[in-house]
Length: 134
Image (cartoon, rainbow, N blue to C red; front, side, top):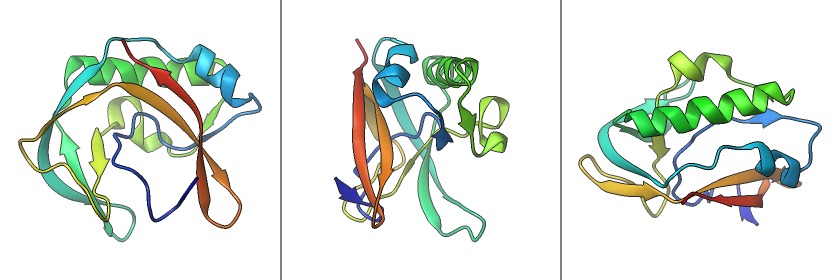
């Protein structure tokens, strides 16, 4: 468990969504792809108030395919993705800058797994499933 203010460093592949499926069923339908290398680009700010600091990632074909395949699998299973403006053609790959860590422009990293994160009471978050990428 971690608090909503203490996310680990991560790359957002799909924005928050709702589904009637349990975490293991969602994990079973997500794509299994090779690990994805990412390269950090410029810094930006997201959110209505532009108060969420992020580092944009270069949109490599592998990263875009992982996003597209995950979105399509979730939608085919009836998931409701909250922010439709930021998927598929509107997807802006990024890593949110965290309190203690961030990707800086030019940094290289590898996405080695997908993690399903559930909201828990009292602004807590819980990793409900991990899906390794080969």
